[in-house]
Length: 130
Image (cartoon, rainbow, N blue to C red; front, side):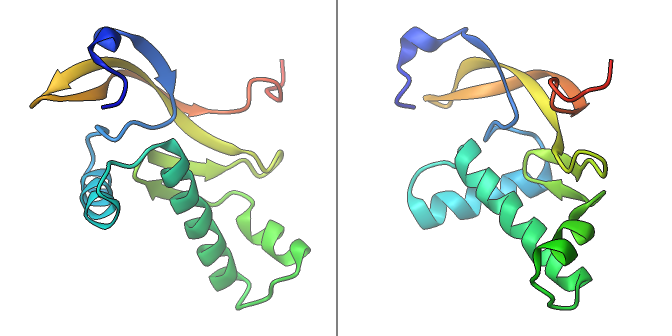
């Protein structure tokens, strides 16, 4: 909401919006706002995903914490995030994620980046084989 009304109509592309329409994200936004008194952003959801990835990798390694074991466990992982379906590319070990085209709108007196188009399974464009 700190953007100000001058941002109304601004179109951006990003990997997260607190307005993402999924049950998991709605719960995440509700819980985050309750705990922090403001809505989450891409930094907080990145932390959520990072912790989820580490937790699931530790389960797969049965608690082994060496780098080789964790990296092997993370390769190809897939999970539902508040921002959508995520995965780790088994070849590059980079995140594969949706990118949303969003527009700033005022909803119930608050400014939100609302999604109106989605590019699923986006890989690092610098590493995509041509």
